[in-house]
Amino acid sequence: MNYEDFRWAKEVLGISIPTTYKKIKQIYKELVKQVHPDSSELSPETAAEETANLNRAYEIIRTYSENYRLDFSEKEFYRQVDEAVMHKRFYQDNYKKKTD
Image (tube, rainbow, N blue to C red; front, side):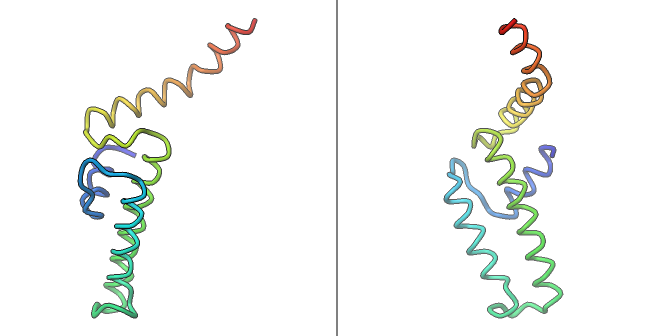
């Protein structure tokens, strides 16, 4: 995941800053209802495409929300990603050194 994907997902879902995961989920559900083929005037193909975009955007935001803090600035995004990568890469080595 990169920041461009994240920014795209934020725009697709119309997320404002600050927000909570609960609010993101609520927005997602409302948008999916709006484009559902049974309740919208969109063609089935367009509805399927819109739903796929919403699902992808929600998955990107959900993954970020589960793994990092909910700060949507670009600087914080990269700081969190860098910390997570470093933690995964070096945590086990540091843990073993401290317990030896």
